[in-house]
Image 1 (cartoon, rainbow, N blue to C red):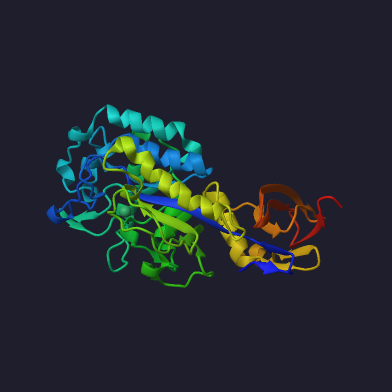
Image 2: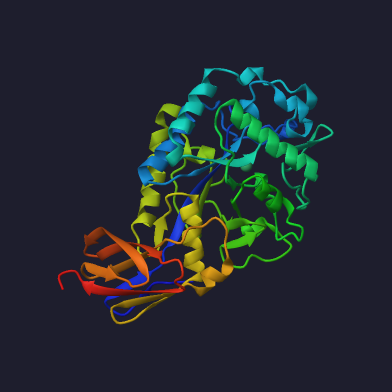
Length: 394
Ligand SMILES: [Zn+2]
């Protein structure tokens, strides 16, 4: 953990990264169906349209981020392949998706494909819930008591999710996962769902730790390493899941800005951008601080979060020392070595290090001081990084 440390003239810290995670994309029908044996869906009073996908890309593009779009894909099934997987939908073996086959599928798929750098397809599920002998239960991957669905069912749900992606050329298979209804179990001795997902290529999981079933505790405040995945605490969303077109407010205190699709949309899809703009304004504030930053993608996000929580940063007389021993000993999978340090000072500084390549960007200079964003890439063998600072003119 690194809070801002000050020697009176400057503040230096490893900022907390933020990632945006948006749940329940993929429905064409907006209606919440849970009272008639159908899934919860998004609960909005209109159908979804391609512009609802463009809203995600717009958010990501404006912020230089790659929001995770946690997708439910049953209503994308062109060929009714889900008849062969009765536990995945409310119609079971009689599954018929003809109603939702239309030009909007290609239009939305095209938006997703054209915006890969600002739209990350994340695995959420096929039908969100699990139909046991035709009766809907929460939820697709675990039940409400944290019992995993049978392993062969899990493998089939993963396989059919991949086939639905292939129908629309939306592959490769995602690297990230959000458990449906946040029902998840962490630290299972035989690996549990995390291990099965890791076998399919999932590297990153996010879910609120508060509702997660634990067989073993996560190692750190906001993340744990579980069967080859990095599992991150989503914390509490700022808005309820059904809240259409809100004016977002409140404080983000953890690393994930979680929301559900309606939170980003307008009742009139032509006006979606008005809602997205409000989120952009809120999130930009966190990008401009010394102690928080907006992560450009999930890998950079997890890299930064692990350094934030495990590296130790000390500020001395125009020096910064960063101890990386705890980061190294974690042997975390699927992260990079480069991370970000931020320094706020009265005036511009220059930075040098014998242990790391450093690229400095000055992102603002105003009465609040000069904010330096340092991309720090330690040499491979470095267990610690010394950084020397000098006033820019010296
Ligand atoms: Zn969901």
